[in-house]
Image (cartoon, rainbow, N blue to C red):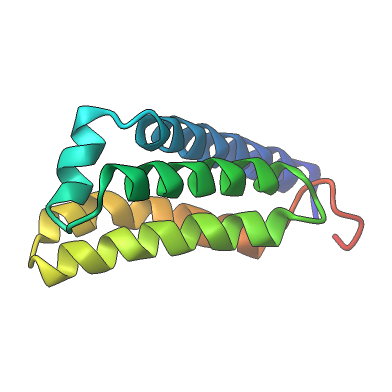
Length: 119
């Protein structure tokens, strides 16, 4: 893998980790916006907080080369769950907002971890 692609992928990874930590923290601390969004899908406050903890763990796993794939799968699964709930509600705007974040995780998986020895 060329150096330019590794640098680009590193930036994408940092963006994904930042967004995962930011959203996970918002869920873990039970921010009103998160409780409202998940509340319409009958998530309790505790369920939102657990989801936030899992999101934070997934974001942190992305940073480690050996746990990179698992972290991305956890993040992508959480985003896919939200997309599915938006589709059930026929909320295409919500889907459109979440779709780039899902694609970000998929691109990162495709490009692999920049520090991985398999590149």
